[in-house]
Length: 47
Image (tube, rainbow, N blue to C red):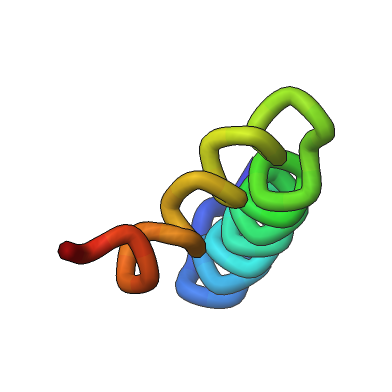
């Protein structure tokens, strides 16, 4: 297999897409919902 700059660009594009989908899955995970809700309330919990 010949490795050139276009192959590298394709690899980086696919890797970036996978990373983006992983971040979306993490952000919208039901498991993290309670932590995000608590963080969203922090500015209003000040004395």
